Image (cartoon, rainbow, N blue to C red):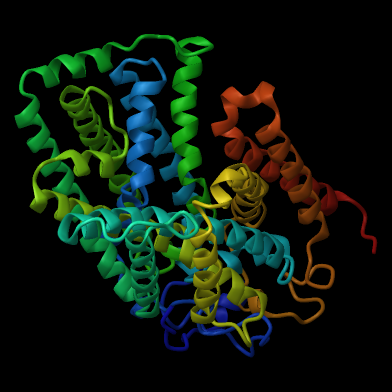
Length: 502
């Protein structure tokens, strides 16, 4: 990530007064173990993101190959009528929007990333544990998504020059390896250009995917003719065969979509800190979540129904559909676009979080750029071994477990900021490791918050692996967040009302 200029601010921030301008964001004598340019507050004069950039963060988050497959599966696998699925998807978008508006607001106001924001509740050193877990989760998914993006690039190369030589190594052909290396280098180049160019990339990739999806829809509609409407009618009728009935199916749709965005929700401050105002953030969240989700889901539904008419089965992977369309130009454009879309979500959800998280571990020696290089190296190994080994050993359950561990942290951050601190932060204390400073607690760790975090995480992880709660697995993240926030609030209030002790 490119290094922003050193911020400027006044001592009002030290007193906890919300920032109102650049002069309110200066950090005086920060501790080197807690500060570098990447973790410093972004002054308002250096923020270039508006509602459109936030909108495209979310469009790129859903517009990957995995996102398309997820949306298509919701319509054909849960036995609900189409309108109920649409309602569930939009409701999930509203829930995620509300969660992000809450956690993103302080980062807009103070210009700080998630790792620094978490110091207020977990302690200036205590934040390292949950941010490291978030980083490890993202590294694994970064490697997986790099592999998925390479399949789109492989489709493009095959369409232009043919399948290439036979044989494979670690499950990948020569074209597969070529595609994988290209994707890895493109992602690294984009990240190295800094947050401004990442924003430009997202602004282009998001609308481009919609343009290609509309073109695919029109092409399949033209080929399928009136049979498309018959197939759509079948989907919208639903068959009601989901175990537990319609309510369980509807809950599964909502929970699945919420869980899909959960990882980005935790560290959403890493993006909102670059927006010019809270209003721009809220507008971007509105258009990028419930509205964009509805549009994307509609296009996905029509395209999937068209594939069912034309090819005798509902194809939920757009790469499979593109590969069967006898039009080389559409194949090339679609493959390139879905490749870029998957790269987009990787930058948003899986590259930036570990880059900042690693920088937070040792700011004096690790910058966000260095953290990004470490992430790229680990992710490259994960993606290279994905087909041969990792996808076969239950890595999804491992990553879901790490995500469940993180859920309470969201609740702790929000409860601490809104209920306990009344939306006021001592900005300079977030960068101070001096004993007795506001967020120093016990040697830099808030042991009470850590206890709440651990107790709620035990619940979240247990719920992931408990068969009896499988139908509610999508809501485990929300339950864990609520429990974490409630425990933190209760313990903190009990401490405040107790007689003074050690």
